[in-house]
Length: 228
Image (cartoon, rainbow, N blue to C red; front, side, top):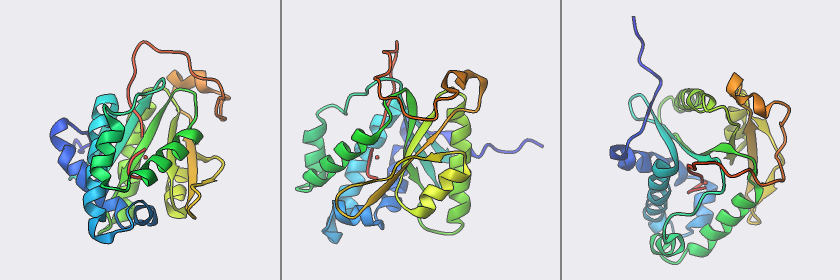
């Protein structure tokens, strides 16, 4: 008997579903309340910003959906420095309708603490509240992580709560130095080396390089909570 894969690679037609999953996951969080203090506008703003980054990820990375479409991951292939979306600040300002400063502050803080060496970046782990949420989170992370490991590069993710961090630790990530956003939020970065032979060039490099990576022939994408 052939079992169904736990995750499937998302396509452009899946953008609306992924944006909804990201928005439903982020909206109830403390980070979302800080980014968009107006509760009446919060979901609409987060939806617009999530769409900007999900679309960008499908150009410069990968997204995976849990079978059944109840959870997703959004990744950027950070093989070298990645450009921001076209007309990023203008489009972000339009989406945020007056809240752009906090989103840009978040962007800068996260970018400052990201590793310089080539890696794949898990920008969104989108698992909305609901039945079997913990099981869905475990399944979508495990399934998409197996796909990323085949690329032979380390993977990196920012986590935002103790439970979020612990989920990643159970899946082979190691915690790296926490850092504050200056608004009471504490970010817990995590880092995972590829276990596959193609990742041997990463052996012994459980730290983050301070040097810029060598330029590669091709690029692919980055970002995190509502992006980047």
